[in-house]
Image (cartoon, one colour):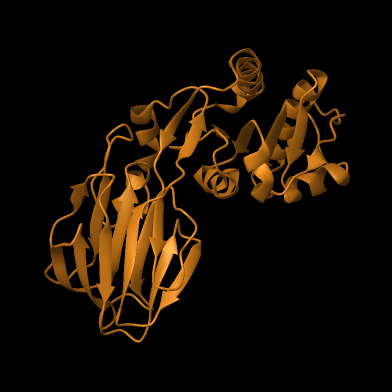
Length: 289
């Protein structure tokens, strides 16, 4: 059995927790690999328990892009760390551990992390799989490229935002015109991502158990209100009169488009599998206050 762990970069508490989990799993005969940055911390001997003793764990180095070969992935940090882990985990279920501030993707508190991970490992040994729930991802593509799938959102916008900038857009859902006009851009979100960039752009707050995708215009001149559509719908965004436009997946991965041209956003083939106990969505809303 193999478990991959990612610790939030530059966070000594995260690395310490990686050490605690690794020690427990290695005693139980589990092969543990950690991301390159966390592994460098172990090689420097800079990993300590909270009681001040040095960890005896020594996991292997495992690039996040190889987490798809693991039985379970563990992300320790915030939502950003979880998204980073998800980009490499493929179909592997991911357990999110928060570091005190409950994130919308991290249901396990740090004080429960070691036992929670060990319990899922026992479950895999007993049943062949951890408990998990599937959340859709979004795939953005143009004629000659496609972006890595997004768990939260895909944004299509001009090179610059603000007064005098933006782009002329046309948005279609399954071929039918939804809106057209000038805006800073268009955001297509999963319900998982409704609490992220979508919310800051005036999109609706949607419970993650609801099946749907969200379409939200960004600072539109005379646009339509946000729209919730079926998860199987295809959104086509045509950009006409900008010098260049850009599509961004989960705030990090981006590709350019020289207008006029179209970008298609639809449900990706592989969902994200979130392992472990369910998140109390309404308790997590406290982080938005």
